Every structure is written in structure tokens, then in C-alpha cells.
Image 1: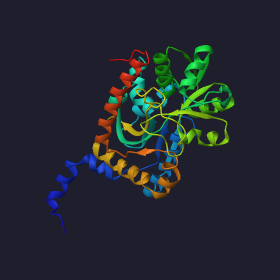
Image 2 (image 1 turned 90 degrees about the vertical axis):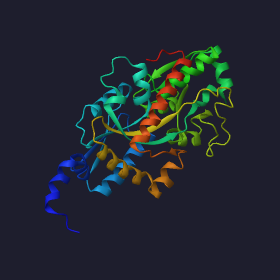
Image 3 (image 1 turned 120 degrees about the horizontal axis):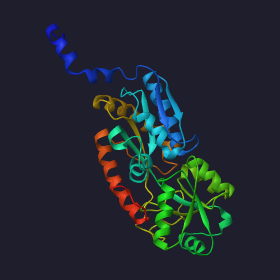
Image 4 (image 1 turned 120 degrees about the vertical axis):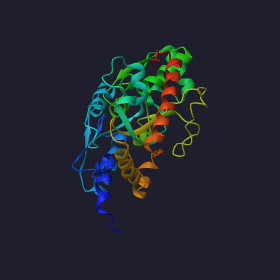
Length: 321
């Protein structure tokens, strides 16, 4: 059906953001990941980048910017042009932990970033170097009463920092934090015996558990993992109110138009639904997928912010109001 000529200018002027969204991506997209290469988040980011690039015909280039509790990498996206060509893929600590614990952030993650999609949750587990000789959380607590134990983290407000802070506060013991420049270095430091413990998911620990160079002591979430049926949950270990939630999400600069967010979300949701990605990466790593819309992602993030505030208080920290 031919559109009357007199209507065309009105359509063009009424939806400038929609017009921009339809042109996305107009050039290569930079996907900033504020963690080093090699971890589960990095692997997922690269898998999504490959599929979105194939679908759109434009390169999606992964830019790893580890360190600084993820603040520098997140800040680069918060201050980027809101045109969809600079995106952030990160974990929850960047969004719902850092603003509660790190004063003077150069950005407000809630205000200065726009959710594209809440992607997935991952089951975290407490893992130890085998030389420690403990096989569960009760034994770990007892060991911490008689010797100094340390753990690898990836900065203030990271999941290991919160988990071991909460465990220590509840049990009346202390675990010493040794910060690294990302999850993968913290895991490798535990494998090498530089630290006694860390917290990570199957994606990072699976091969080390199979090789016997790491030992899983407990897993978070409500149920045991099918891949590790003999590893108890934290609830079974006497710490049911400590749930080391980790989620991955995709973000754009805060002023990105809603229509553009929706277009990017559609591409990412299609990538996450790829049967090959599900079969080879998501299912084996025990991920729970939530490719939430931008609007639904905001609600999930708000709920996690409240949860993190409560967890920090239980850990003896002083989160921002």
C-alpha cells in the first residue's frame, strides 16, 4: 500500500529514536568487559558478540578492561555516546555492590547506565585448595579458629568479599582478603596455593575440580547442582541466609533511547537462545538464563540492590543508604 506523500514528514519527525534504532549497528560495536579474559563472563560475552556480529553484519569487538573493582571499565561506558555502539557486559558487583560500598564513584550505575538485558544467574561455590584439608563449611569455620585463612577476591564489593565477610561475621572468625584483577586470577591463585579459598562458578572451576586441584566445599542457591550432587548447599551447611548471588547483565549508556535498547535486546535474546550456545555453554555451566527486557531488568536490579544492602549489613559492612 502506498503511503500518501503528505504523511511521510510526520512519520519521520515523530520517531527520530526509532529511526536511529533501525540503523543499529551502523559501525563496529565495542563490548567492554571489566574482567580479564578467560572467565565465564568473558566467554559468554565473546559468544554473544560472535552471534550478534553474524546477525547484523557489523563486528562486535570485545574490550577487556580488568581491575579497579570494575570501576574504570564501567565508567567508560557510562560516559560513552548513547548510540548503542559502546556496550557493557558485567556482573552484579559493578551495578548493585559498588555504589553501596565504594564512596566517590565517578558514575551512578543505576542512573548512568541503561539495562539492555539481565542475562543469567550463576551458581557460586566456595572452593578451597586441597592442602587445606577441609571438606565442608563447618570444617572450614573450625579451621579458621586456629589458623589464618585467606581468600582470593576481585576487589571490594566482589562476591568473595561479601560471602567470606558474611561467613566470618556470623561464625566469629576472620578471613583475610587478597585482591586480584579479576575472577580468573583469583581462581588460578587458589589452584596454585597462593590463597586458601575463593568463590566462583562451574565455568571457572569445573576443570580444576575434575583434576583435583580445587575442592568444592558448598554451593549457593536453594538446591544442589546436578553437576556436583555430592556438594552441599550453604543452607545445608548452616548458612541459609547467605546466598552468593551472581548475575550477568548487558548495559548501554544511560541516555540510550528506549527503542534502541529494545533492538539491541532482541539481538542479544536471539543469541542467547541459540541451541548451540545453550548446549555447549549455558547448560554445562549450570546457568539459569533470564534474558529479561530492559524494563524487567530494571525491576530485577532494584530487587538485587535491596538484597545486597541487607547482605552487607549481615557481613558487618556499612552500605550506603
